[in-house]
Image (cartoon, rainbow, N blue to C red; front, side, top):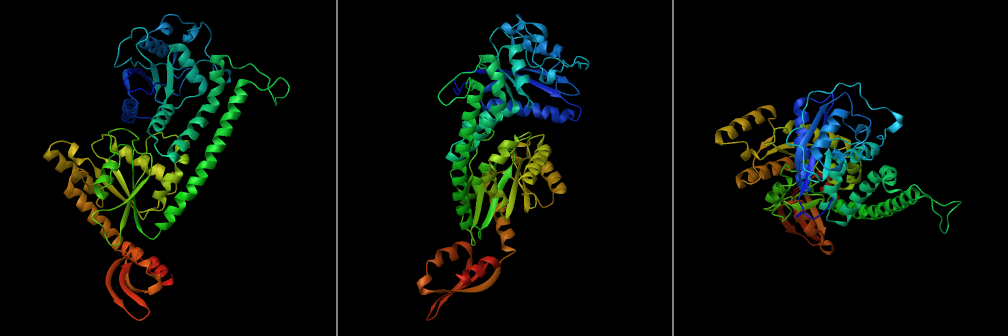
Length: 466
């Protein structure tokens, strides 16, 4: 798919409703893939849905729905097809020599949101599932256009939005891991099954497929070494902040975390109405400054069916959530499926080991639920279900001020009073004391400065031992 946003890209969307997915969740997942597509600059002009016990092993859809998809896509694949939709006149490939699941009755779903397209009118087919390489290849053969499953769409968004060296390396590793099992199908399409000789080769040499796999393994190893070095730097930076009050913003993508980050800290972080606009962790102090200082970190957003490889790859980024004293779980309350988003975020936090970190729900975008009467009603309903939660709009200064006061009160609970004696030759500690403690009084004796402070017990002990 082209990176040029000026080139319009039209897509058809394919989704199969499985027995364990209810109608609300199914509709929400389709709407989410629409938003993912828009983030890539793709306009979904038609949707093909089907209810099935499982994805068809050959091409996701049954033969009837596959014909509907070909008609929607248009082009050569819709008019020059072989058995079960192979435009080359051959059979579709089925993993494990399975046959097409013709026995499953097709539900009376219809092609929606579009009519049969003119030849070449649709450029790509988006599939709202993670599909196998042969299923993707069969869909491409049947439709004659590029096919991207949900994982491929998310990975492409991450690739385009990655800015830092670490984020780019993390995304490239996952994309290469995703590509490896698909090389065989690409090889079939491009005739890369032949072997070839070469310097250092054995026998007839290695095939293009083997060569590509080896290059990918080498590249992944190289990127992993780079990430390990960068992770050590990040651990060192976090170690310097270990005694500070730390808050991590977590939540679904596009829930308003970066807007809230900007409002709390005054930092110039990127704010965009796009999915996964933020991939790099940013750490900034709350403003106006508090004593002790409170640091806020913005983290990568979550999404339903987030590829496990991305969760693992971004673990170093998500470690900010693990080491925080408090998680602010930001929820877009204006989204009809916000409760499912709550579940997804909780599942990912549990997966990375942050399920036990203290958490405060922040229901954001209350100003988007309707008029003043609707806003009051929704806010009351939310507070009745989650009494400790904060309901706000990150664009209202009064709401942000109330949240800031709540953060200060949370961290003030654990503070104790004590004295720290700093010798005159250790005055470099003054900066740390004023940043991490609330200084109540300052006096002097012959040996140094005596600070009367309120601070966390562990920090107090460390300063006294310094």
